[in-house]
Length: 262
Image (tube, rainbow, N blue to C red):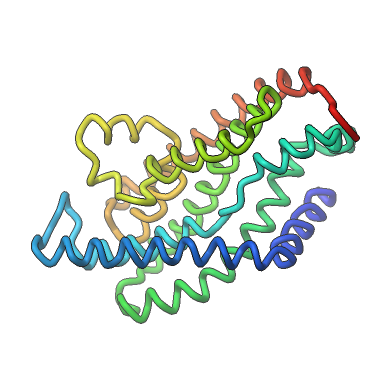
């Protein structure tokens, strides 16, 4: 465990060192959130309720979605592809530590830095717009647990997509495909409750909703307490399933490494 704590610390320091990249990414997310905020404000000016969402609920959703989207915002598919091409990945595989575990704890450290920074900004804006009365301690506690589960699900999804880089040189396409799927089906752009029937059912059977929609719904009170527990159990099930699939596919991917440099 000491090795993983070292990876956690390195990830936190990497996040601090890459503050320019982080600030740029957070600014892009903030602009997206601001646009969505005013779009939904315009929509709710003509309708008081849409699929169970009121304007007060939607305001909270936009802020919490921005926080969840800013945590663990950095992908690693491009980095893995570069290390494969340069031949540096073999050094990672030779280390006396799980490669996936090393990746996870490094990125968890980075996510911790992102969460701390975004919490200060988003928390202040959230309280200024929605007020302290909108925060319920029980739901806040469940939200933090669900957010951690969401980070683990998102990591597992990114890990599976990163394995495609062992079979293709087009890592950019792999990364963008994962980003589009995650943003759309996680509820980052539109809450899943707004989806048409067939599309919503499809999203419910995918792991992406565990990344963002579930933590957001828990915090703002879209789900009852029993539904919150059920959805957190679904998150845990997805973590186990995706981790198992990653183990199987990882062994196959590592067996087809072709070094072009290094």
